[in-house]
Amino acid sequence: MSSRAQIVATIGPASGNAAMLGEMLEAGVDVARINFSHGTHESNGGYIDAIREAAERLGRHVPIIQDLAGPRMASGTGHAFDAKAECVTEKDLKDVTFGIEKGVDYIAQSFVGSLEDIACLKGEVARLGAKTPVIAKIERREAVDAIDGIIGIADALMVARGDLGLSVPVEDVPFIERDIIKKARGAGKPVITATQMLYTMIDNPQPTRAEVTDVAFAILLGSDAVMLSEETARGEYPLQAVLMMERIVSRAEASAVHTTNSL
Image (cartoon, rainbow, N blue to C red; front, side, top):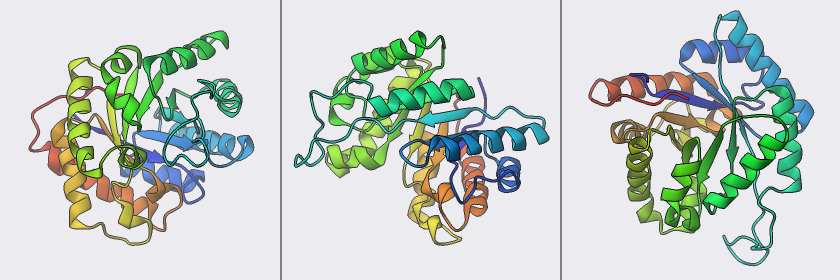
């Protein structure tokens, strides 16, 4: 247990060198995420190596989340998914094999629809001789409806609000976020709030007041971690985004009364 919510930063072209990573780790990053929807094994493997190099220089271990691409949407169906798709796609299986070889600390499964999806991925991880924990990304209506079973089998949860907001009425997203955080905390499972938290900072050195409020209330609701995505992966101000996130988290936690479940 920890008294401080963690900051997850997505690593990409804007932040993938050891020098920038070192500054970001010192500024407050606790966990690094690599989005395998983008890049190649060569480029993403380079990010993993750079994270470890920067962390070693600081005498720290920085957990790495491998975020899988997940299944593709069925063509012509809006935000619907192909019911015949494999629970683990061929691309994801290749990426999981690579991630395990590189020693990633967590695997995040995208577009989870049921507890069976998590069980399937865990089975593939075990078949590869690993015990890497699996994070269930909640970004589909089906996952919201099956949340109790998913929480029971997943090792951690991520409320991925961007795609979730395409699957449910957008005005429902804050309340789904609240309910998932509450249920995950009740089960003792770490929960990450993610997507568009400081989105303005992709192109601007300052966030909007609404974004600051969003991050603060994620902490006040009980999030164990908050995540930067494009802000640090490809944005113009990756270090400033981390520094701002750290400021907001620290201020929000001065008013919070709960402990957190660390990744």
